[in-house]
Length: 354
Image (cartoon, rainbow, N blue to C red; front, side, top):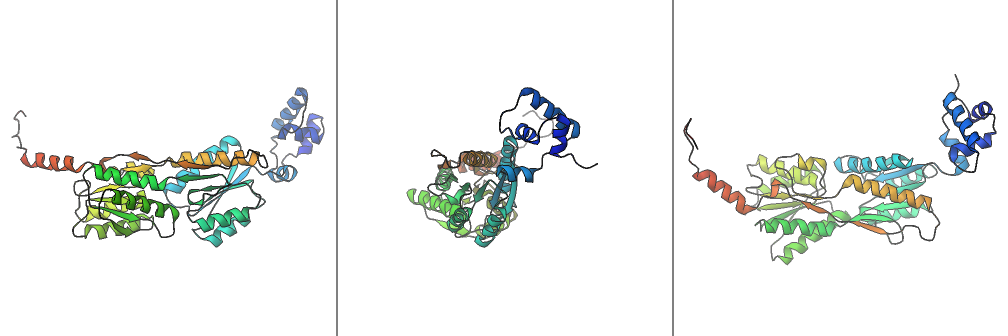
């Protein structure tokens, strides 16, 4: 059987096509009796409104475009999860595309979404790419995330600098003094802010700095961890610019016989789900990633619905990371005491009471 059309619904309900449209879109007044007949006809015919036709008549698609620098990894999957939950709750759909951290690909993705979405969320840790995205969007409502803060446009950014300072201050409070930073990629605004926070906190404590390059991947963290294990004198702590690199570095250090946290403490950034599952659990700066995605989607939808209003949302919202302390940064005094206690402990003979 052919799918039912809006005319079939109108014929069965004995009303005009316009009345069916008003009932289904909520645009315009109809009587309760008319609404009841239309909905009974819709259910009986299993009618599904054609989204393309609806969008032509209303100029709305109820779809949001999301452009991310990458689709791989726990951070982006958590972000999309939060957006998707909010979108479903608000009756919107998502179209997700990756720019592969490239301005030209981001431009192509934005052009391909024009006419298909009511608004855009663009996450770009590169200021030039974020500005380009904003210019290409034209009048399309857009929300920028992370490095793409822009005066006059709704945006959400993480306090990367403040989070990095908190990470270093925590390591210093545990007795560590030779703290090395595994940095994110050059040109990435988030990585640069976290590096600046590390340098500032170390300078404030009068401590020397050591920076090892990374790329926000576990592989780059693993490579950095191997370099750190071979340093002389060896550092006693690592602050990695994200959890992926922290986890990779931890694995490399353990492979080299360096104990975490006894010989070296480690702090990450983001609090991806894996951070609490590795051994030892990773101390990190928590960003509620899914919640940030939810918030971004809700703000964009609000912006779409109030487009053109004088009081439309154009604020830059700052997300403050929260320090989550786990065993990877047990204080140095405690680890030394536990080693001393283990060395002096006298084993009990079998059957002897302790």
